[in-house]
Amino acid sequence: MSTHWTLGCDAVDPHRIAAFWATALGYVPEPGYDDPDGASIVDPDGLRPAIGFLRVPEGKTAKNRMHIDIRVAGEPPWDMAERAQLIRSKAASLAALGATLVRSESYGDQLGHIVMLDPEGNEFCVA
Image 1 (cartoon, one colour):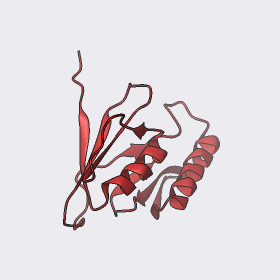
Image 2 (cartoon, one colour; image 1 turned 90 degrees about the vertical axis):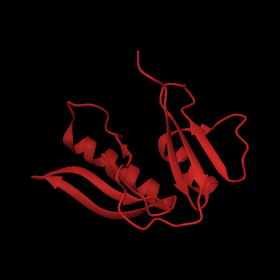
Image 3 (tube, rainbow, N blue to C red; image 1 turned 135 degrees about the vertical axis):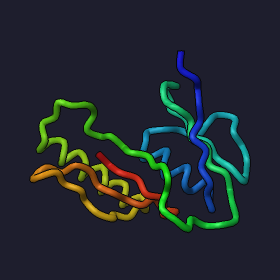
């Protein structure tokens, strides 16, 4: 049996970054969690881990040692053209929410993933 766990994250503005990630992942604010210096988001279906954000005074200074990959294309096998369109569409919607496009990574002539930064500069990938 697996263990329930929460991903804990530092943030300059926990409520802003929680709102970004809730939209990015289809999560919702954790019911009953009310903290001016923290925010928590949960999977509305209760299947995936919660993500907590705690206010810290310092900003991000180095590359993440761990990051989130948003897998919009699901599991293989894929229609590669459809997969590329799903990745590009999700990246565009996240850019509209304040994310920054860093680069696209391709494998041969196929789009592998897009590297982005969330509004606080944390790297993540859309695949």
